[in-house]
Length: 384
Image (cartoon, rainbow, N blue to C red):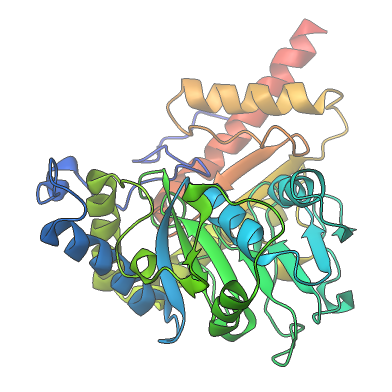
């Protein structure tokens, strides 16, 4: 039987896992101060880019001796830049438990052709981070955007490691407490937890990573857009606002707005609390609902941003088709947009719970999940 149509509706149906919902107080008019039509090398452009870097450091609590750069091509460009510049000096551990981590494995093994030790886990699980040799370089995602599985903490990473840790933190930064002393090259994009516009990535380097850059030259040629050193020294301008290629000053203004919004609501603790509350609302619903489960098996590894769910009802024989049909029903009603599982992930739903999403919208969505599930079960029973 189809449940009654819920009375409440989310005010904002945007639950996409990237690009993600804008901050609740956002409007296009808030970007009126953007340095449009000006060179990013003019004083106003450089000042805004430096403000984005300084604001990132302040909000995330990045140590003063770490370098922060704005780089092209979103998180993908930032992480590729880190791998192409830093890897090859010593053995590498590649760690993957979802599609983006698997993509980094492909790039290292097939493109850079580095002989790497590969550690994987199935969707819903996490590789054993304690089993790695951190005297080697280690590449991993902190939060698996397509699996909803995250590293719970950095306790297993030794402080006295000889290798570098390269961490794709794009769905974790601003929502999870990242242990900077355990991370040497960290990347993320503006379009995730902060709800910024796409195209730009952030690259954060520890002093140990900078030392590697200045003492090691990779065997492969580096495209201009990837080069972080010149004459054996770090290109300082990249980390003070002189980006490698022309940035969108409208996107920069959008990111500055998001940083200011985050400061106004209480900074990083408030951002994490909002994401936690959003995810917990879904976890409580799943606990009380027999036909749906978290994709992440161990509660300690469940993401508070990219919450991935799977259907567990025995009546469902076509998991992918059923999940797509449920997502389509919710989109047709204007209740939830873009919540289907990632194409490489197991069939199900993926609901973004980052800080720009209101918990009231998550709570309004949940009865509609039941409505869409019942409606699709009923439609399939009638068709049979």
